Image (cartoon, rainbow, N blue to C red; front, side, top):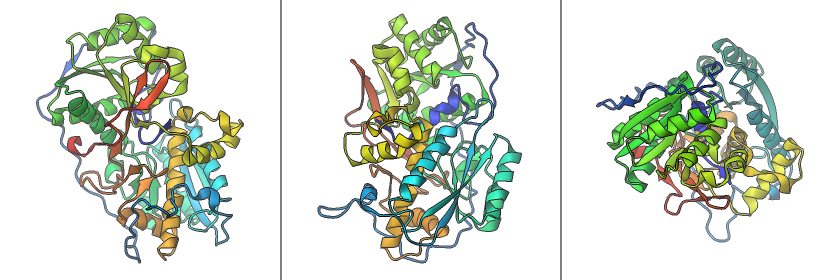
Amino acid sequence: MVVLALVAGACGGDDDDDGADTTDAPTEATAAPATEAPTDATEPPADTATVTTEPATTEPASTEPPTDGEADPYVAFPDLGPPTGEPIVVGLVNTEGAPGLDFPDIRLAIEGSVDYLNEHGGIGGRPITLETCVAAGSPETSQACAQELVGKDVELVMIGLDLFPDYATYGAAGTPVIGMLPILPGDYTADALFLTGGNATSMAATAAVAKDHFGAASVGIVSADNPGANGTLASLTAALDKAGITWTAVKGGDNETDAGYQGLMREAAAGNPDVLVSLYADAGCIGTMRGRASLGIEIPVLTTGICSGAEVIEQVGDDAVGWNFVGVATQEEGAPLEILQTIMAPVLDVAPEEVDSTALGLGGLGLTMALSIAVYGNLLAESGGEVTGAGVYDFLATSTGLYTWPGTTPIECGAATAYPSVCAFIFPVAEYVEGGEVTTIPGLEAVSALPYLP
């Protein structure tokens, strides 16, 4: 299993990706009264993006999947030798070390990917020099990172998770930004490109599955009550409103007792909705799964890819029957899995065959971003374009037929005018199958978020 698109739902759980530090929750159940849906849908943000990078100097390349006999650029890395061109200096900003905002797995996965790429083609034949700066979840540290990286003359900045990217500093220096995951509303209209869609797109895809797959007219939601979770909830309810689905939300603490999670699930299911949605993550995944099973609730549940992780499934077993995971697809044995295992084995200090691709969490998105950028650089080089940070950015912004690594999820930057920085709007959906397996749901290999984006 590879989390291809979405673990953004972690923003609503124990690790708050939306930027607010969370305090310790009470040990007793703290479910708040249910909140009924408003009658009006949330308005989309204004389109205020201004792209400052220069236009591409070459015609956009055709990047449709290869036909028989052509090499697949997304899995060609093992056949590429060490790059011999001039090094390309790439910056990385990631948030680590702050309470509730500690994501070293992203940096480690990207560093491992860079080590691998420097043995297998680099970015368009250029070896990669990675300059890393760690932010601490505050505007001041994000600004300091931007100034540091610009001062080092990086050609491109990768954003792992950074709550307050200093787009003004990058823009003034003409330094393009490619991010992993938009978090706050300003990211959606920023002078940047994001390879995944964050809460807005993942929650719109969740609404699409609820309406078009389950035929839901009503949804019950359980969520933690903190700023990060509330942001995720707002994205979900706006998408449900657009889909014409009524909803009831029940909020609890960041961490609940078993009785507390049971109480949340009982209250969310009290009106017998067609579908339940859990916005909890990590320990909350385990608690809500066990709570639903212990109460004998059979209403299907939608949640994010983070709840499909091995550490969760090992704890709950068949209590996960009836749970569906937005942003997760089955990965069969083959070249993509071998590449992933080769990269992550030294990072995790295990043998390649021991790498569990379901347990990479947000690190998996970091790996996907690094390898995707390398593919775009390679395709740019093949088209005769000059491989620079700005060139790769423009290639991504203007080309058609691109995918995120490993070449299964299509992307289209700017497909939604209200979210000009977002490139990904398609999500696979998987389900837990009795006996311990999580598999892609037939017909839900590619769910579009576009119809229900608020």
